[in-house]
Structure formats: structure tokens, C-alpha cells
Amino acid sequence: MLTSRLLALLDRRSLIAVGLLAAAAVLVPILLLMTPESFPLHMPAYIVALLGKYLCYAILAVALDLVWGYCGILSLGHGAFFALGGYAMGMYLMRQIGARGVYANPVLPDFMVFLNWKELPVTWWGFNFFPYAMLMVLLVPGVLAFAFGWLAFRSRVTGVYLSIITQAMTYALLLAFFRNDMGFGGNNGLTDFKDILGFNVQSDATRAALFSVSAITLIVSILIGRFLVTSKFGKVLIAIRDAESRARFLGYRVENYKLAVFTLSAMMAGVAGALYVPQVGIINPSEFSPAQSIEAVIWVAVGGRGTLVGAALGALIVNFAKTWFTGALPEYWLFALGLLFVLVTLFLPRGVLGLIDKLRRRQAATDVAENGAQPAAKASGG
Image (cartoon, rainbow, N blue to C red):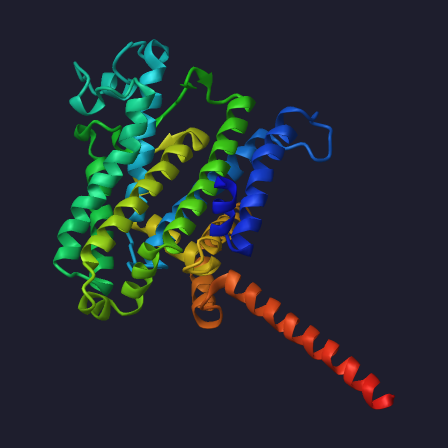
């Protein structure tokens, strides 16, 4: 019963995406852990970590697509929610180091000892417990998004003005987290992690597990997104995107719908950041950079705004290209990214997924024309 309901939520491309992700969640760990290095399909640990990072970005893209693609809220600050979730996870990982740090302090992280801090700040209390840290991964981005949205949406701030305010928010957090007296590691951030739930972060088994968890979380994100956008709630979001004044005139509390989806999206972004940190091994204020949030917008635009699956695909495509460019032609990456965004805006307004759908429809039309012409030719010949 539950399976049939889940399948009813998925269109063809979502079903394909979920199937591929489920297969990857099983096959990638097998190729890493159960095949020798000489095996042609062996998956090195660094590749698994890199793919896991891509999946975290894909979760962020799905979260952003919920608010931009379906509600018309162009957020240029979703990187802030991603970073806050990452910091919550990083604080937990730092507390797990204990006396194994450089200064062998069982309570204070190394950077606090170096800065001559005498006691653990209140903001760090409880982060030695995994459930508390996971609660903060959801709660901190969610509360910030709720507070921001309450003020912005009830003031009816929309369009480019809202986008600018979201970018100002993430830039303010960037400046705040750079300060050493904030107690979050300053410019260097949090790093040198040892364990997660008692398992070595650097071990192949842990990397494989984190990859699988990231893939499953992306599947859950797509399912949640599909559930929302195919429900009455989702139809109202689309109405707000297309004609906010009309939706308001019909009696819908537009600000409540915006606030709900914006808060949920921020919590999803926080989860993505939490999965990102143990796989990358560091979290620092650069994650709050406005450029990070703008890149996320480009991912969604490239893959296909308002499709969920396209947003995730765009994140994978752009970050794969980024990895290649920064390795081969690092000085040209930003130019390539800008050119990509311009080309997509001009020639692929519905993104890569829209192009695929267009080619499929064209092929179907060609097949119908050919199959229709053959019987006609036979009839005339008879």
C-alpha cells in the first residue's frame, strides 16, 4: 500500500532518478570495499568522497528548487542554511576529538586552547551528543529561515528585493563567522575530524556509509518534494509563483505558504551541509560566501527549474565540470560558469531536463509520422 502511494508520486524521470540513486547507494560501496584495486571497476576512496560531495550539493539544489522553481522565491542565501547545518555537524565532530587534539584538552577544541579560552562556550554545550547535534542541524537553519521569512513575507518583500536581502543575510553571517570571538574557529573553521558515531571518518567503510546515506537522503528529498508539489499545497505554491496577487485575492494566506516552504527548504539545506562536512573534512566561513549561493542557483537553472530531478542533475553536471576545470584550467572556471549560465538562459530556459524532454517529444512525433505514413503507402499500393 505504502509502496503504491510512493510510486504514484513519481513521474517517469523521478522514478528513473530514484532507481539510479538506489543502485548507486548499493553498488558504489561494493566497488570500494569488495573489489581489489587492480579490478577495472574498483572505486577509489577519494572518488567515493567526491561523489558523496556532489550528492550533498544535489540535495541543496532540490531544496532550492522547492522555493524557486515552485514558489518563485529566488533565494541567493541558501548557502547560509547549508553552512549552518555543516557547522552543527562540525561542532559534533570536534567534540568527538577530545584529548586526541594537538593540545590534548579533553573538552576544548584546539583552536580554543590556542586562543586561550578557559571554558567551553554555551553555544557548544550538548554537541558531544549526536541526537542533539542532529536536532541543531534541523533547528538552526529552520529557525533562521522562519524568522527571516516571517519578517520578509509579511512585509510583502518580493522579487529582486527579496533576493538581495537573502544575499545580505548570508554575507552578514560570513563576516560574523570570520571573527575568532564568535567561537567557531574563525577563518580556519573546523577541521581535523577523527570519528563519527565511533567510526573513523577517514576509513573506507565510513566513506562508503556516508555516500550511501547521502544517496538515500537525496532520494528522500525528491520524494518529499514530489509529495509537496503534487498535493494541494504544491498547487497553491505554483499559483503563487505564477500569479501571487490572484492567489491572495482568492483568499489564500500567501505569506504562510511561503513561510512553510522556505523553512522546510532551509532544513533540507541544513541536512545537506551536515552530510557534506564529514565527507569533505572541513567547514569554514567560505561556505557562507554569496558566490556559493549563486552557484546553487546556476545548478538549478542548468538542470531545469521546477523539476526537482533536474535541479539535482544540474548540481551533478556543474560540479563535475567544476572539478575538471579547476584541475585542468583553473583560471578559466569562473568564465566557463558565467558562459554556461548565459547559454542556458538564452537557449535552454527549461534546462537540460527540458532539452531531454523536447528531444524525446520530437523523436516520438517522428516515429508517429513514419508509422502513420507506412500504412498509408500500403493502402494506396493495394
